[in-house]
Image 1 (cartoon, rainbow, N blue to C red):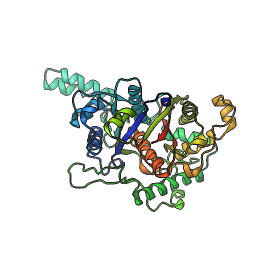
Image 2: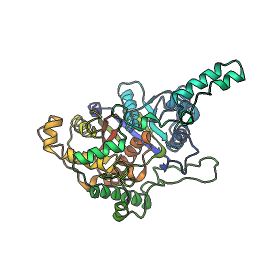
Image 3: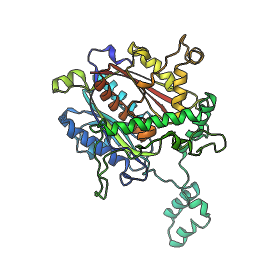
Image 4: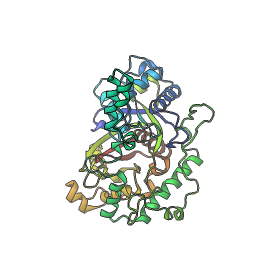
Length: 432
């Protein structure tokens, strides 16, 4: 999609996120809907936009739940927003909040809405537990039974293993059976990515994120959350290592391929709880309401690859299309923010973007997309250090990148996100 073709651009006016915290720690008592409601409610309060001006909420989550069917609508109702606000939920795995933003942008560009909230949330502390098929059948049989004896008889043929909750199916790629980390290991081997290269990327992610917290860069982007029992406020990401050293990463054991692997807990993104939200408007509407945009959504593209090939390579296919639609090249980008699912995936994506052979054979282009200056890449850290609540990461990236463009006096930035299923997203942002 090329947003810049229209005069009345889609503006990102404000954004906010919760702290991103390791699953099972500081925000474990909050469900996905609680995190989402908290960040949207606070965003509305800080922006001071009249609630009546918002007519759309597009919000998403990746980890499914049985407790609500439409997270976006729950957010509207629980945040105390006008009940007339239209709302629908989206899911594109790790690119979910990018999808929420671009879906809302399309609604604005086609004249359906002028002001929208977009974002995503996930709590890996709140993953729903299933039951085995045998236990499910026994429970249904017991529910229909007319007497206590028949109810008990329904469970008589169950084994102890039938009682244990099964591992959620989404922990592996359904069509290949691979865990995400196993797919990343394959990418490392296919692309000749060394352990040292991966550990360096992880170390730099933590160094940059620690600096961004220390110098106040993240202060205005991250709200304070007070989870139940309301006695301990959470004010910052708790996964960032302030004392990161390369030697520390080198001591970690491989997590997926114990004998020959290079991916460890240190050079991969961790399971995380968190939420993000963006307030976007038609440019003319922002002007009439007196809001100065943070920046604009200039173009975007989505792509997909065979999950059995290189699961996390799709951003390399999406990025050149988004750049073409913006009428720009990779060399025109003042910043690049690349989601760090794994350091191996980052290194493989960078290598493919810089390769003429890859461009010719895979992208149908005569020249490489281009090399990325390390000084422009993930300058305030990435998902390895900050954490990765699946549906919230894209919103974090958009907000942080637009703020950094403003600080540097830059003009354009490229965002890329890889996602389960062999999916990828790319967005070109323009500063205000």
